[in-house]
Amino acid sequence: MSGAAALAAAPAGRAAAPARARRLTPWGLAAPLGLAYAAFFVAPLLMLVAVSFYADERMTRWGLDQWRRFLLDGFHWKVVADTLLLGLKSVVATTLLGFPFALLYRGASPRWQRVLLFVAVMPLLTSVVVRTFAWIVILGREGVVNQLVLGLGLAAEPLRLLQTELGLVISLTQIEMPLLLLPLLSVMARIDPRLLDASASLGASPWRTLFRVILPLAAPGLAAGCLLVFASSTTAFISQSVIGGGRLVYLPAMIWQQAMVVANWPFAATAAIALLVSVSAVIAVIAYAGRVAAGHAHG
Amino acid sequence: MRMARRRNASEISYGLVMGGLAVLALLILVGPVLVVLATSFTDSRSIRFPPEGFSIRWYALLLDAGRSRQIHRAAGNTLQVALVSAGLATLLGTAAALGLSRLAGRAGRAADAFLMSPLVLPGLAFGLAALMYFTLLGFRPSLELIIAGHLVVVAPFVLRTVGASLSQLDPALLDASLSLGASPLHGFRRITLPLIAPGIAAGAFLAFMASVDNVPVSLFLSSARTDMLPIRMWGMMESTLDVRVAAVSGTLVLAAFLLMLVMERFTGLTRRMRG
Image 1: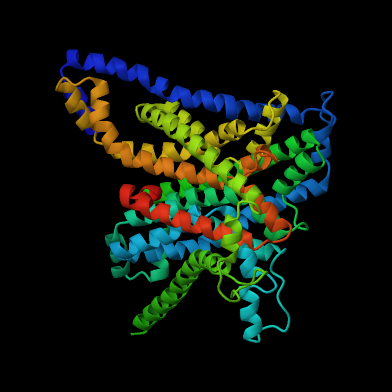
Image 2 (image 1 turned 90 degrees about the horizontal axis):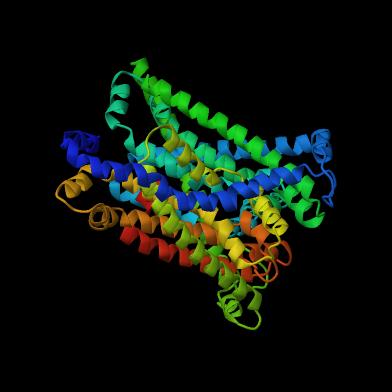
């Protein structure tokens, strides 16, 4: 803003030369990365689409066979649905725990805010594989949870948590929570505390304040976080296969299996495009919901 | 009177529910990291918690060049790929962020969305696409290909942190230097660069960590010769659940912790990640 004002205030002749330099360079500066994306990102994705239109796995002739095979089999639709549902369950679980954490952060002193922020970020910087491994130790037959449950006499036999979707969702909650927290904490910190005081002094209960004041104000950050959690948990191949086990089939495992074990690239490409399209569709809906909610808060 | 009581009840329920969930969140965030660290010092041959006895035998085995050769090679590859891809991403990403910051309007927003898209795109689909692309073009598996794949996936981190520092930069500073007769390059070197340097450093660090951590691309592009650490660890977890997995994990946790403390000190990393 102040830059535009300064520019407008500058004498016309003096501003002309830098202005031209400014008009020319932005695209030039972005070009090297843009070219790298064209060569290593756009071209591969186009190739993926092309491969999906090979009719046979030896890739000798074109045809819609793989697409027909994918779309006409109910099992594949179920895998797509299970994958998206897993993502949604992770989003709900991370929000349920992450939002109260963000409220705690909002009310904390600057010193504690730094500690909480560190705690939120730390898991993000320990490898996904490490986090997955941690949950094997926690959820296994002789794991932390079972030792606790058996020790307290809550169950006679060890609970089966590994290789179940419940165990997988619990693990993904921790594995993906930092992705939710980062954007959420940032909007939370910007909420004007006087709004909450005003809401309380007008007689609103804390619950009402939460749903009518805090939630709408935090919506953009919440949506941004949910989006990242959804994208990451639907593609989390290692967590899905190690904690979920072989009996829970999600799209990533199917893609990997088809590409690397069965060596049917056209079908793997078809499944990968199904993953891309279905995940992107849900992400678009989440992003739209976030914008609508933010619009309400401002309107 | 009754209203006051109702108010109280709702305050208590709010505090209990929200406080309880927040504590659970804290526990679930920190707990697993501590469990991994504790497990890695076990004296037993099986992975169990609480660990039996205390020893560093698994770390010793991990350091043994002969018996852990595969892990060493995978770690070396991972480090090499991360250094080069994060370095390239920092260079290209900073330039692109500088360009994007001066692009207003629809085209600028579209360019920004395009360059950030690998962050929300299912990485696995891209990993498979990269495998098909490089193979059908006739390339054999190599670290260079993995670097190219990682570059795309980690560049958004640089774009985001550098973009954020640029948006906090007061353009009046640069305009002042230009109107005082400084050349644009001089203005960039003496004003813009020092002010966005912490953002660049934070972006480089996040890009490096994202590369070390990457699974979806490495899963498809790595081979026996170009093995990557996360993929090797996955193999170890799927087969024997070797206790060395715990030692590798412990090492990674400690390294990340130390690096993060250093970055926090010099760049205010966590604030930057919060955006």
